[in-house]
Length: 87
Image 1 (cartoon, helix red, strand yellow):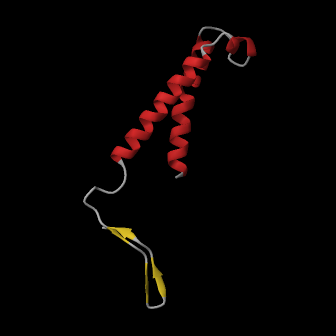
Image 2 (cartoon, rainbow, N blue to C red):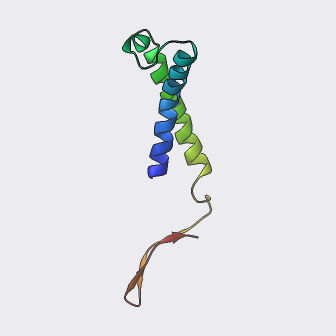
């Protein structure tokens, strides 16, 4: 779960990092507030959300068990709990 959250956070912050690199290479100081006041924050947020949605869709599509897999629930065997799994 932490991996998914970290990936989505990375995808959301990617446009902001790209804009900071643009400011740096255009000889503007990305650490100064004035550099960000005229920035396209609205579009950076929109792009970050679009990347996050794409990341969610790709994660849901290409990870997890195959559709024909069967879930076997946890059970109590010989006084011990056997965890559930997908077969």
